[in-house]
Length: 114
Length: 112
Image 1 (cartoon, each protein chain N blue to C red):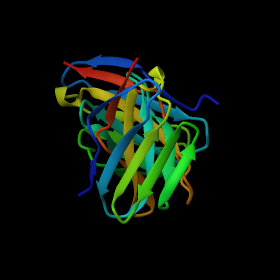
Image 2 (image 1 turned 135 degrees about the vertical axis):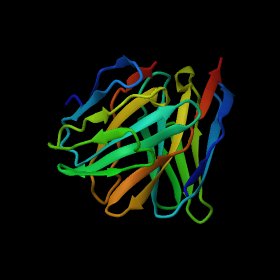
Image 3 (image 1 turned 30 degrees about the vertical axis):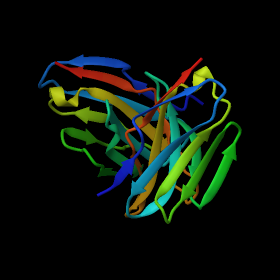
Protein backbone atom coordinates (compact mmCIF):
# COMPACT_ATOMS: atom_id res chain seq x y z
CA UNK A 1 0.00 0.00 0.00
CA UNK A 2 1.21 3.49 -0.87
CA UNK A 3 -1.00 4.98 1.86
CA UNK A 4 -1.89 8.63 1.27
CA UNK A 5 -0.11 10.34 -1.62
CA UNK A 6 -0.09 14.03 -2.51
CA UNK A 7 1.12 15.91 -5.56
CA UNK A 8 2.87 18.21 -6.10
CA UNK A 9 5.33 18.38 -3.19
CA UNK A 10 6.13 22.02 -3.86
CA UNK A 11 4.31 24.73 -5.82
CA UNK A 12 4.76 28.44 -6.41
CA UNK A 13 1.82 30.45 -7.72
CA UNK A 14 1.18 34.05 -8.58
CA UNK A 15 -1.74 35.88 -7.02
CA UNK A 16 -4.92 35.12 -8.93
CA UNK A 17 -3.79 31.83 -10.44
CA UNK A 18 -5.78 28.67 -9.86
CA UNK A 19 -4.53 25.16 -9.28
CA UNK A 20 -5.51 21.76 -7.94
CA UNK A 21 -3.71 19.87 -5.20
CA UNK A 22 -4.07 16.14 -5.68
CA UNK A 23 -4.66 13.56 -2.93
CA UNK A 24 -5.17 9.83 -3.29
CA UNK A 25 -5.37 6.91 -0.87
CA UNK A 26 -5.38 3.17 -1.49
CA UNK A 27 -6.66 2.01 1.91
CA UNK A 28 -10.36 2.12 0.98
CA UNK A 29 -10.96 4.76 3.64
CA UNK A 30 -14.33 6.48 3.65
CA UNK A 31 -13.19 9.66 5.40
CA UNK A 32 -10.79 12.11 3.73
CA UNK A 33 -9.85 15.62 4.75
CA UNK A 34 -7.67 18.58 3.89
CA UNK A 35 -5.75 20.64 6.45
CA UNK A 36 -3.49 23.62 6.23
CA UNK A 37 -0.64 24.14 8.65
CA UNK A 38 0.75 27.57 9.38
CA UNK A 39 3.53 28.41 11.85
CA UNK A 40 2.22 28.64 15.40
CA UNK A 41 -1.34 27.75 14.43
CA UNK A 42 -1.42 23.97 14.23
CA UNK A 43 -3.46 22.11 11.64
CA UNK A 44 -6.77 23.63 10.56
CA UNK A 45 -9.46 21.71 8.73
CA UNK A 46 -10.40 23.11 5.31
CA UNK A 47 -12.86 20.56 3.87
CA UNK A 48 -13.71 16.95 4.51
CA UNK A 49 -15.62 14.08 2.95
CA UNK A 50 -17.30 11.06 4.56
CA UNK A 51 -17.63 9.19 1.28
CA UNK A 52 -17.83 9.49 -2.50
CA UNK A 53 -20.21 12.27 -3.52
CA UNK A 54 -20.32 13.84 -0.03
CA UNK A 55 -18.26 16.83 1.06
CA UNK A 56 -18.56 19.45 3.78
CA UNK A 57 -16.78 22.53 5.04
CA UNK A 58 -14.31 22.61 7.87
CA UNK A 59 -12.97 25.51 9.88
CA UNK A 60 -11.34 27.53 7.05
CA UNK A 61 -13.10 26.70 3.74
CA UNK A 62 -13.07 30.10 2.02
CA UNK A 63 -11.10 30.18 -1.23
CA UNK A 64 -11.06 26.40 -1.61
CA UNK A 65 -13.28 23.86 -3.38
CA UNK A 66 -13.32 20.07 -3.16
CA UNK A 67 -15.06 17.18 -4.84
CA UNK A 68 -15.13 13.43 -4.16
CA UNK A 69 -16.09 11.49 -7.26
CA UNK A 70 -14.31 8.31 -6.15
CA UNK A 71 -13.38 6.75 -2.81
CA UNK A 72 -9.68 7.05 -3.65
CA UNK A 73 -9.33 10.70 -4.74
CA UNK A 74 -10.01 13.99 -2.98
CA UNK A 75 -8.57 16.98 -4.89
CA UNK A 76 -8.42 20.48 -3.40
CA UNK A 77 -8.88 23.42 -5.76
CA UNK A 78 -7.65 26.94 -5.16
CA UNK A 79 -9.91 29.16 -7.22
CA UNK A 80 -7.87 32.39 -7.20
CA UNK A 81 -4.71 32.10 -5.15
CA UNK A 82 -3.91 34.76 -2.55
CA UNK A 83 -0.72 35.29 -0.49
CA UNK A 84 -2.73 34.33 2.63
CA UNK A 85 -2.98 30.82 1.19
CA UNK A 86 0.77 30.32 1.45
CA UNK A 87 0.94 27.29 3.71
CA UNK A 88 1.66 23.58 3.96
CA UNK A 89 -1.33 21.50 2.94
CA UNK A 90 -1.90 18.00 4.30
CA UNK A 91 -4.43 15.47 3.11
CA UNK A 92 -5.53 12.74 5.52
CA UNK A 93 -7.76 9.68 5.43
CA UNK A 94 -9.33 7.27 7.90
CA UNK A 95 -11.99 4.65 8.30
CA UNK A 96 -15.26 6.21 9.42
CA UNK A 97 -16.34 3.70 11.99
CA UNK A 98 -17.09 3.77 15.70
CA UNK A 99 -13.59 2.84 16.71
CA UNK A 100 -10.30 4.62 16.84
CA UNK A 101 -10.44 5.73 13.16
CA UNK A 102 -6.90 7.09 13.21
CA UNK A 103 -6.21 9.62 10.49
CA UNK A 104 -3.22 8.93 8.25
CA UNK A 105 -1.53 11.90 6.66
CA UNK A 106 0.05 12.38 3.26
CA UNK A 107 3.52 13.96 2.94
CA UNK A 108 2.17 17.46 2.33
CA UNK A 109 2.27 20.12 -0.39
CA UNK A 110 4.25 23.27 0.30
CA UNK A 111 2.53 26.15 -1.48
CA UNK A 112 3.86 29.67 -1.89
CA UNK A 113 1.68 32.40 -3.39
CA UNK A 114 3.55 35.48 -4.56
CA UNK B 1 -15.79 27.52 20.10
CA UNK B 2 -13.15 24.90 20.62
CA UNK B 3 -10.01 25.62 22.61
CA UNK B 4 -6.99 23.33 22.89
CA UNK B 5 -3.90 24.47 24.78
CA UNK B 6 -0.44 22.98 24.96
CA UNK B 7 2.95 24.54 25.73
CA UNK B 8 4.75 26.00 22.74
CA UNK B 9 8.21 24.65 23.54
CA UNK B 10 9.90 22.22 25.92
CA UNK B 11 13.50 21.11 26.37
CA UNK B 12 14.76 17.92 27.98
CA UNK B 13 17.93 15.86 28.22
CA UNK B 14 18.63 12.58 26.49
CA UNK B 15 17.62 9.66 28.73
CA UNK B 16 15.23 11.75 30.82
CA UNK B 17 11.43 11.71 31.11
CA UNK B 18 9.23 14.53 29.79
CA UNK B 19 5.51 15.18 30.16
CA UNK B 20 3.66 17.27 27.58
CA UNK B 21 0.30 18.57 28.79
CA UNK B 22 -2.80 19.35 26.78
CA UNK B 23 -5.97 20.98 28.08
CA UNK B 24 -9.14 21.33 26.06
CA UNK B 25 -12.54 22.98 26.22
CA UNK B 26 -14.77 21.46 23.56
CA UNK B 27 -18.28 20.22 22.95
CA UNK B 28 -18.95 16.83 21.39
CA UNK B 29 -15.76 15.20 22.72
CA UNK B 30 -15.21 11.80 21.15
CA UNK B 31 -11.57 10.97 21.91
CA UNK B 32 -8.08 12.48 21.97
CA UNK B 33 -5.08 11.76 19.76
CA UNK B 34 -1.41 12.51 20.07
CA UNK B 35 0.64 12.87 16.90
CA UNK B 36 4.37 13.34 16.38
CA UNK B 37 5.62 15.58 13.60
CA UNK B 38 9.27 15.92 12.61
CA UNK B 39 10.28 19.10 10.82
CA UNK B 40 9.21 19.06 7.18
CA UNK B 41 7.28 15.81 7.54
CA UNK B 42 3.69 14.70 7.99
CA UNK B 43 2.17 14.02 11.42
CA UNK B 44 2.32 10.38 12.49
CA UNK B 45 0.02 8.69 14.99
CA UNK B 46 1.30 8.06 18.52
CA UNK B 47 -1.66 7.33 20.78
CA UNK B 48 -5.40 7.50 21.27
CA UNK B 49 -7.50 7.87 24.45
CA UNK B 50 -11.26 7.79 24.63
CA UNK B 51 -11.74 6.63 28.25
CA UNK B 52 -10.14 8.04 31.38
CA UNK B 53 -6.81 6.57 32.35
CA UNK B 54 -3.39 5.73 31.07
CA UNK B 55 -2.52 4.06 27.77
CA UNK B 56 1.02 2.73 27.56
CA UNK B 57 2.85 1.94 24.34
CA UNK B 58 6.54 1.28 24.77
CA UNK B 59 8.40 4.45 25.74
CA UNK B 60 5.28 6.56 25.18
CA UNK B 61 2.22 6.79 27.45
CA UNK B 62 -0.83 8.99 27.23
CA UNK B 63 -3.29 9.91 29.95
CA UNK B 64 -6.81 11.32 29.75
CA UNK B 65 -9.17 12.89 32.29
CA UNK B 66 -12.42 13.81 30.57
CA UNK B 67 -13.89 15.54 33.62
CA UNK B 68 -10.88 17.88 33.79
CA UNK B 69 -10.47 18.31 30.01
CA UNK B 70 -6.86 17.26 30.40
CA UNK B 71 -4.41 14.91 28.76
CA UNK B 72 -0.69 14.38 28.84
CA UNK B 73 1.87 12.55 26.76
CA UNK B 74 4.73 10.99 28.71
CA UNK B 75 7.97 10.17 26.91
CA UNK B 76 10.49 8.01 28.77
CA UNK B 77 14.16 7.33 28.06
CA UNK B 78 14.33 10.25 25.70
CA UNK B 79 16.35 9.85 22.54
CA UNK B 80 17.69 12.50 20.18
CA UNK B 81 15.24 11.32 17.53
CA UNK B 82 12.36 12.31 19.83
CA UNK B 83 13.08 15.96 18.99
CA UNK B 84 9.89 16.88 17.15
CA UNK B 85 6.59 18.69 17.47
CA UNK B 86 3.89 16.86 19.43
CA UNK B 87 0.31 17.61 18.46
CA UNK B 88 -2.70 17.11 20.69
CA UNK B 89 -5.92 16.61 18.69
CA UNK B 90 -9.46 16.26 19.98
CA UNK B 91 -11.98 14.23 18.02
CA UNK B 92 -15.35 15.93 17.86
CA UNK B 93 -18.72 14.84 16.58
CA UNK B 94 -20.13 17.15 13.90
CA UNK B 95 -23.37 15.71 12.64
CA UNK B 96 -22.54 12.28 11.26
CA UNK B 97 -18.83 13.03 10.87
CA UNK B 98 -15.98 12.88 13.32
CA UNK B 99 -13.54 15.75 12.97
CA UNK B 100 -10.15 16.41 14.52
CA UNK B 101 -9.34 19.78 16.05
CA UNK B 102 -5.61 20.28 16.67
CA UNK B 103 -3.69 22.24 19.23
CA UNK B 104 -0.79 24.37 18.02
CA UNK B 105 1.76 21.72 18.94
CA UNK B 106 4.63 21.50 21.44
CA UNK B 107 8.13 21.68 20.00
CA UNK B 108 10.32 19.31 22.03
CA UNK B 109 14.08 19.63 21.86
CA UNK B 110 16.16 16.79 23.27
CA UNK B 111 19.67 17.83 24.27
CA UNK B 112 22.65 15.46 24.59
